[in-house]
Structures are given as C-alpha cells and as structure tokens.
Image (tube, rainbow, N blue to C red):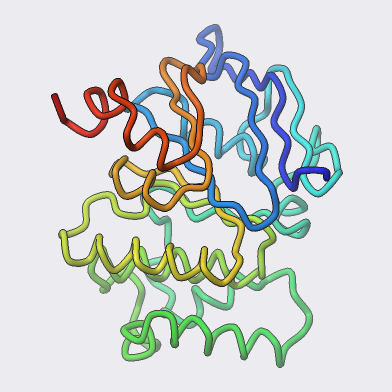
Length: 238
C-alpha cells in the first residue's frame, strides 16, 4: 500500500547551513506520526518544507502519490495538506469566524463550509462564544484552538501541527492534546511536532527522533516512550 506521505532523503539549507540532512519517513492514511527533538533539530524546518514554504535543497516529497517538487504552497493546501504553524499566526484584526473562513478560501462548497464552521465550534465551544471578537483579543490557548480549527477548514487529508501546546497553561495544554487525540480517534491523519515529548509519544503510532537535522531513532510511539535513551534525553528521567 502506498503511503499518504513519503519523504525521501530530504535536505534543506539556509544559505550554507544545512538544517535538515537527509531525513526520510512515511505516513500512512489514518496514522499519527510525531517528530521529537530539541530546539534546532530541524522539526519546524521539515514541516515548512512539506508545506511549500521553504524549498528543499535535495530529496523527494510525495503526497497522495504526487511529487511536490515545485508545487506552490497554496496548491499543496488544495491537495489536502494543512499546516497549523508554530506561533499560531492567526489574523489578529479579523474576527474568529473570519479567520475560520480564510481556512476554507479555496473551497466553493458554501453549505459544507458552514457545516465545518459549526464543527469547529463543536470541537471548541469557546470559539463559538467569541466568534465575533477580533482574534487578537483571544488568550493564547484560544488562539491555538483557532489555528487548529482554521487548518481543519480545508478538510485536510493530512493535518500538520507544530508545537500546539507551546506557551499554554497545563490545563489548556491538556485540552489541546485531548483534542488531538479526538481528531486521531476520528481517523484524521496527523503529523505532530510537540515540545511535550511524553504527550506526543503517547498519541503517536510512529515516532522519529531528530538531532541536528538527522533522524537518529525511530519506532512506535509506545516503544520510544519506554526507550531508556529517549526517557533520559527528552522526558527528563534518569
């Protein structure tokens, strides 16, 4: 069976500095896959390259059987690959609902878009309460809810989440990660980059550990959760 996403020997450079050094992995339909590693390991750069925001220096990316070389970012979204970025990047002066509708800017099925706005409000009832507020007035956790919901508005085949719990309170972090688990349970295919390695590994079907742009370890999420080297390096355990 062909994987939904195939990344082969991906290399990405910023000038003369190579940030991603030959990364390869696959994601099957319905899987949750996580990338873990310290800051600067190349996780966010990998996601940006998959979304078409940064060009690859070498390697191959195939999504749903299509080579993404040279495909612009907006066409990658249209193919079904959505990205909820680190830092959220919501539009602060637009309302919550206007931000959601921008997530569906490529769609023409107006009635279905309205259904998906309602789905977002069901997933995150707090967004419904604030639907007419400027998004910049939301708390950090509410902005993360909005960023995730906006990404879902294009009905992606693969949802990429970059640091969804960053900067959130423990209570809000649990809410966000519980929502990721809910999306997984409904069959959403997810590529997760998350600073909370324990939470990420607990959710993941498969996990990859990045160090200085290279994959140094891979395996099932539960397997790596109990790996001694991972526990010491990323879970703060002796």
